[in-house]
Length: 82
Image (cartoon, rainbow, N blue to C red; front, side, top):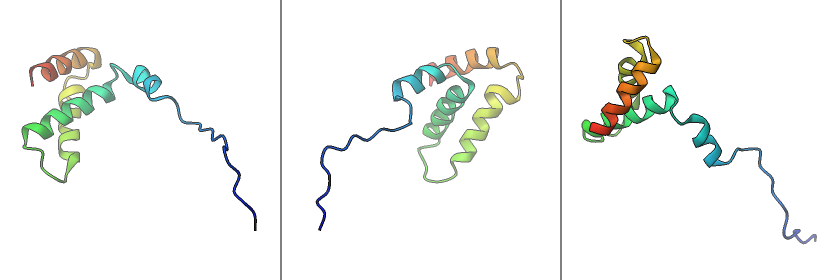
């Protein structure tokens, strides 16, 4: 019977979490995620249907305005006030 090897070094291809955060900071996706979270909170944190909040957040941030930079600034101010 073979004994398992100890101290195997495991390498992963996934990026460092801090690096991912740095790369996505200020992105439309981040703004949408934050706004969707705030909408979910305002609805009382119900279980199920996260798409409802996500799609509403998308419409508020980039769908209706069509100008991502202006929409992101507005989303940031909305998140601070929520």
